[in-house]
Image (cartoon, rainbow, N blue to C red; front, top):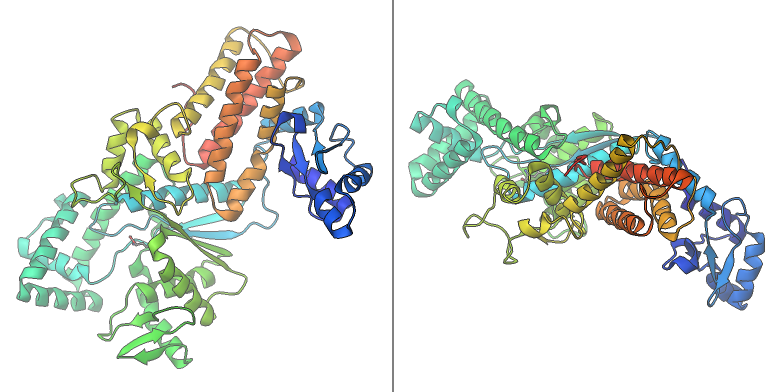
Length: 544
Ligand code: ARG
């Protein structure tokens, strides 16, 4: 379904020869859309802008869509959509199973790397952000017709397993009784000992060697620690209502068997060089090289990601690769993307994007941290929000707070403010949805029938219908530039337009066709709010 804005754009472009850059009008008296195209053309042609605009409007063929065009101010062109066109565009959303979201002509395979917590550690606030943001990308890209494959790159490999396994054996710990919080306690005890006890540190190092060599008992304990952690991660995913499941787990260890080949290949082709005993890849523009193998022969984070990139391109057949992590990992990803490209592991056509997000701050404006005694675990944040409201509302509050600012910005976790049902919050949007539902249920109880939007005489009705007609366009934008705050802003504007509509246009107290049309407008708004919230991973309960 082509949006009104894009239809208008193509018609105006046909007459003007350049992109008219249609903008939503800033005031109702300017109509619905405005373009400054005449001002730009006038400059190039050296003619008075109002003359150019006057000429243009005789050639723009939009009589079927708009009221007669108007030239305003220094030479703007104002477009007012005819109300029956607007009514049809909004009504179409109600019938459309995709609610006006265009389905990709050439669906892509999109791999999104998100969540990716670490074994034997509880998810911290940073993991809250990647999980919520990645889940939103998953939903938006799926809704636009792409095939999305989440990859949960859990930290299930590395030196820390030496001390973890050694400590488990020393304590004679029964891992079948351990949960994730218990595993994290174990982690802390092991870490303390590592610092204090030389011989323990030695044994931990040897244990890493045993793990790499595939020693049976060592592997069994390692696997057990992963299983325990997965149970904990899944509990959190379930509580958050995100789409991740075990089938999306592709931890660091799953690339182990590829690392040696990657190193040999890159060394043979002269892309990797030995530097101070380590095998590294230097890339122009980066301060430090990517480390493929350290001077003790160990493989780390960089080479694992290079192998993962190769695997995702070659084996998974990704067309687009998205990584969602803390903004501080930007350099790491830019570097491994560059290495993989230099190596020819990913084709030029494959788009790689790192989406970095900011920190979650406490009310004191400082990052959450356990050392300062404030909540650092994701679970604690959920608990904090649920102290104020029920779970669906708490989740709406947290997810909306996470998604409604530019992702790279830090944001303050203020449970009270986030859970308020007024202002730019998730609960406010849920409330707007429930309110639309309530009106529809009342109409139903009174036996009032309605079907489509037919009358749009009032400015408040028109403003609402116009916003509704833009939904698909906004979703397409978010699918493209991965900035969910644009969808949040849109939904907030929609909820606000809906409440002005209620104030100015009685629904149940009006009559006949006007009432039926207004009910259809409520139903469409409810549908768009529910669909939009759904794309943010937020539930839209019928009652609040
Ligand atoms: N486990 C890492 C962390 O907690 C994030 C991994 C991100 N994904 C990746 N492919 N490196 O910071």
